[in-house]
Every structure is written in C-alpha cells, then in structure tokens.
Length: 196
Ligand SMILES: [Mn+2]
Image (cartoon, rainbow, N blue to C red):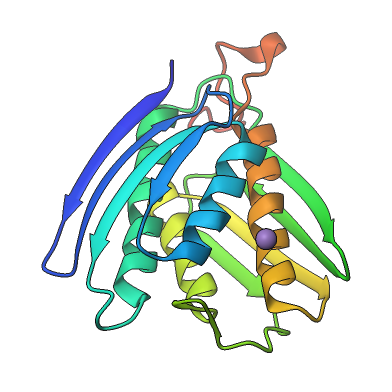
C-alpha cells in the first residue's frame, strides 16, 4: 500500500493528514474552511484516494495559511507515497465540464515542480470563508511539494464554485491516471533517464 502520514505544525497551522493512494475515494476532512473541505472530498473521490485530514489554522486571520499549508502537506504526502515512482504511468490529463465551466488539468509526476495556472474567470472573491485567489496558492504548494509539473487551464466558465470544482475534479482524475501502476512496466521507472 502506498500510504503516508504527515504531521505539520507551525505557529499558523496544525495539520494531521493521512493519504492512501490505493484507496477507494473515502475521506474525512475537517479544515475549518467548508469550501476547501468540499473540494478535497471531491479530489479524493475522483482520485480514488483515501484522505483523512484535520487542520487547526489561524482562520481569525483569513484562510490563506490553512489553504496553502494543506497544499504543502498533501504534496509532501504524495511525494512520500510515490517513493522512487517505480511503475507509475507518470502522466495524466483530464478535462471536466461542470455545468457552464470547462477545465483541463495536465500533469507530469516529473520530479520538477512547475505550475501553469490559467484560470482568469473567478468573479466571486469569497466562497464561505474561502478566498478564491487561494486556489492558485493551493495548486502551487501542491505542485512544489509533490514535485509535479501541473498545468491547469480554464477554457470558459462563469460561476466561481463551478470553475474551482472543475479544477479539483480534473486534478483528481488526472492524478488517478498518473499514479496508477502500469502492469507492463511495474518494475521500471517511466523515464529514459531512469530516474524521476
Ligand atoms: Mn459543489
């Protein structure tokens, strides 16, 4: 089983996270940010990961530290779960429609952290207690700590909830493809260099 437990504590957030990459999409998530809980539940479901997460963050400030630090913890967990990345398909691409919104996520578990984020149409600044500009910060933290090349492209959309939800669902589906073990190459690293 590819699992990781991350405990991360700073003066701003206290996070406990367990990730099982070979799970069934079950999750128990309590971050104090309802919209983020909703997004991470979808990410786990569509990625078919099991994810348990609690965060006690400084929400009296805003959601910034909580959202960013959860991205860091999840990226660290992904890196730990994947180890030397032997056998994985490595690449994933998925396009998700969510009512009027359409988003594509393309990713490479490359060992080189890079985020391309083209999501220009978020008309709503705050959803519950979640600042929508934190979406980019979450994905940057995840890409950096998960050592992912992550491209997120919104094609169009009007409703901020729909657009962000499409991002998370597409990420879940693309990750599911990329971390899956290729049975024909289960003992090989998917790079001509021999290392990812
Ligand atoms: Mn929703």
